[in-house]
Image (tube, rainbow, N blue to C red):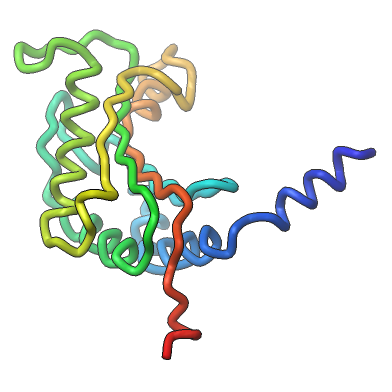
Length: 173
């Protein structure tokens, strides 16, 4: 019985800045969420925007698809109103990379994360000092790498915003 109050307590302790940033991202990215191009989630320390590989990159490449540029501009606009550390993480499935350009999934996942970071800081709306890239390769899979569909779920890029502090337009003077 003690677990239930703890769960309720944990829910009530979500930082209002995390709620605000999540709401702003969901409102801004509504059409992309509805089309399954990305998802927005949160926990007690961060907000995460998760892109599928199908949305972001051609297979085996770190070159952003054209459709990503306006989406990243929207995200950049929302994040410009918040402080907090922004970590862009690239993930792959567990199949070996079939490319002379990348030595491993580590190289490919890092290159993809860097491509997104470059675009996020390109317009100088976000301070580059608060943004970093991480190649995660096949670590932290969302699903077992046992089917093509599951491997596709694991190939993704995530933009995580840790401990955001967002301006509240209602309280601005």
